[in-house]
Image 1 (cartoon, rainbow, N blue to C red):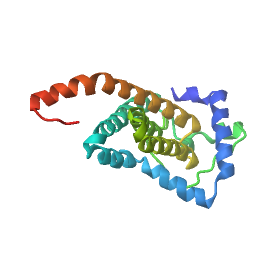
Image 2 (image 1 turned 60 degrees about the horizontal axis):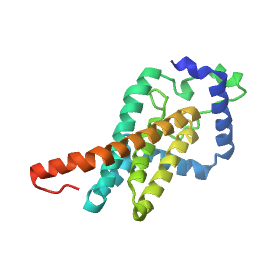
Image 3 (image 1 turned 60 degrees about the vertical axis):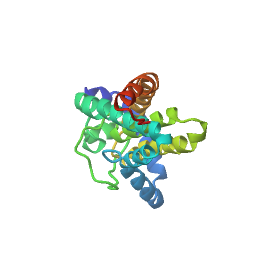
Image 4 (image 1 turned 180 degrees about the vertical axis):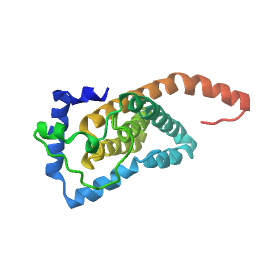
Length: 211
């Protein structure tokens, strides 16, 4: 299925975005984007830390559960299913003639280590947005101070994957869509079924409040 992305439409999108990113690269952004991209490293370091912090107080426990569920669902869809089915090579492993035929010279900046996994979709992007969007959807008005910054950070993680040249821009776009869909699935599953029906049944059985 990887040959599908050699279509001129996808190549042109990737080249156009890469050209923009190349034009804004500088030593300061190199440091910032490298730091941000590592926040999403498996298993999603920043999201695990935030999720644990939200699980500890009972008043934010539901948000922590939503975050971890979004992280898990997007990871399964993206990393365990789609990557293994599509098998798109990383941009640095692509036949260089594809880039040159599109009028672009791909240069590996060496900001992070190269990955040996498949490229499409972006796992960092899907898991980050999946976790943050599920969290944001579950936030009440007074909790948006947590949800909005988390979602903005998830978008920056996605952009950082393009900046460090480890993903094609179309990988990141697809990863973002998977994350958004995963967040919606998790939000409705938990707010319509798990929290109102399953959790009360468990609490009644163990005679203890969990959330």
